Amino acid sequence: MADKMLPFRQLLKSGTPFFWDEHINKLFEESKAAIISEIEEGVRIFDKSKPTCLATDWSKTGIGFWLFQKHCSCKGSEPFCCNTGWRITLVGSRFTHPAESRYAPVEGEALAVVDALDKARYFVLGCDDLIIAVDHKPLLKIFSDRSLEDISNSRLRNLKEKTLRYRFRMIHVPGVKHHAADGVSRHPTGDPEKLILSDDIAAIRNSTMSLPPATYFFIRHTSYRFRIGCY
Image 1: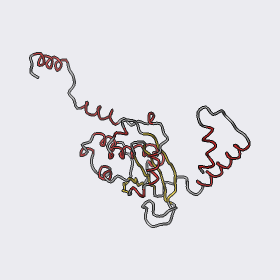
Image 2 (image 1 turned 135 degrees about the horizontal axis):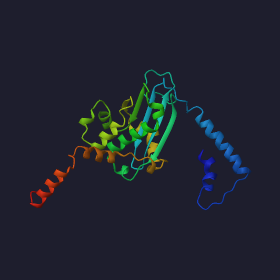
Image 3 (image 1 turned 90 degrees about the vertical axis):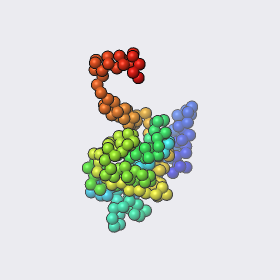
Image 4 (image 1 turned 120 degrees about the horizontal axis):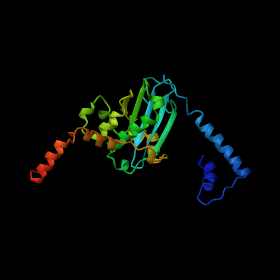
């Protein structure tokens, strides 16, 4: 596939004049046929009655996800039971914002879960058998039945709160088997500026809501104490 697409990459280089002839057109048609042949057995229309898996991943470069559904006859509903049983429904990725690239690993992986659920919400909202596959085991404790009040990290608490409208169970998949989501997180395509999650803004808002109201008497009393050196 890469060899077939190489001539088009040359045409997309900056300063290259537009050029199209019969040879390029033939390559274009061959590329379309090759893409169709690659996906006709791998991509399937979503069926809400089938077991569904959302595999997510975060890296300092980007975050990404793959949405799969089970089409094989293997027993159980655990993902990746065989090589061809789980078929693709949706794939997505984006670059991380500079602040997101500095997240702690557990925060970044939680961000990837929230971002994936949001992008795949038309498929996974109301899904009865949704599995989220991650390669970061600490997430299992955070996204289990642990209450929001028990999560001291405000960013993780805000991220978990965004997932409360979804029904899912989370499983850990070793990194060596997490190739799909890992690949799109390390080679993302989406624009980070349009997809920033406002976790820090929400954290500031939540913290200020607990402060007392700044009434006239409160301000006057505080100013007086400041003048006489009570602080």
